[in-house]
Image: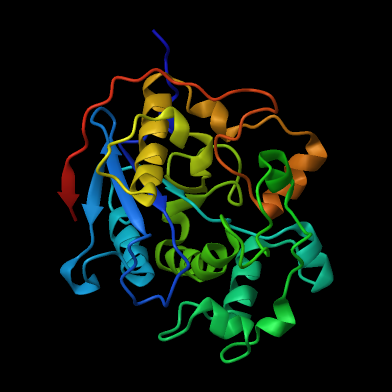
Length: 285
């Protein structure tokens, strides 16, 4: 039997498929949340009634603060980038400091403000996005390794740019509300410290290996796949290595600024897991 170090045991795992559409207060069918405990398969979390039929980004951030403020140790996987390529920091003369980056970004891209679309900032209607633009040719080390699109590559199928530009201010909000109660990985350190953890995930790594409920949309399946794959990894005692990726010293230093995708395997390694799926139940917050 594999012994799992206590620091890598989570009592709750949350998978989130994010959306950068519309504004922070609008109900979004593409924003989905699934939750599992250590043993039971993930179930979908319905938004609070005030949010409407679907989650809003604001309601989700507030819900995460409420959940993570408690004593249930939680791993949260969110499907958008947590930071930008090193070229962005160099181009705009920013210190390699992630909390300061979040403050600077939200000041120029206030996409958490009411009635503010990401495209409104891009077009100069709100904020000052022109002073903090990126280049679609810039990619983080992790994007290159995952063969993922740039966080600045807007208006293309499968873009992560819009969800990232919409989500970063809400990471700042969560950090401001919870402080040291949570660990933003890997910015607060690569090694787990026993706190709840928020990490960037890439559902495409796992969604094809997870049996699909025919009633689920693509967004629902991606959120379910994140929570279920991480749950299975924990049961198998294989979660800890995900937080210690195979990187050179230089890559690790850069990734501590740019961020990393949790669970990204070494090149050429196929991610597999054994399954005994059950149909998920609906769960309301």
